Image (cartoon, rainbow, N blue to C red):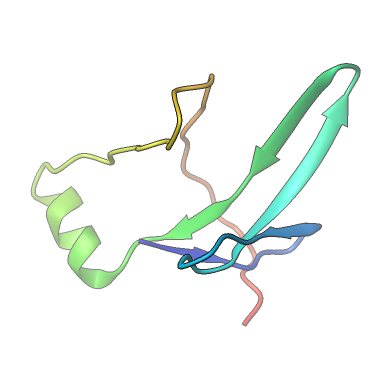
Length: 76
């Protein structure tokens, strides 16, 4: 899967030796949320359609996260 720039993205996270991560950062009260959009490749879809799973690895620990699927307007 690769991160993609999407309609509503308002920031880009960057780190050495990593690709850019377009995201939408929102603050509601004291809660900050960051959403990024990932597009599965044809190979990823084959694995998922065969019963494979989506795996999440967060460097430095596991904060609360949510995964979901929805249609998104991707910006090329």
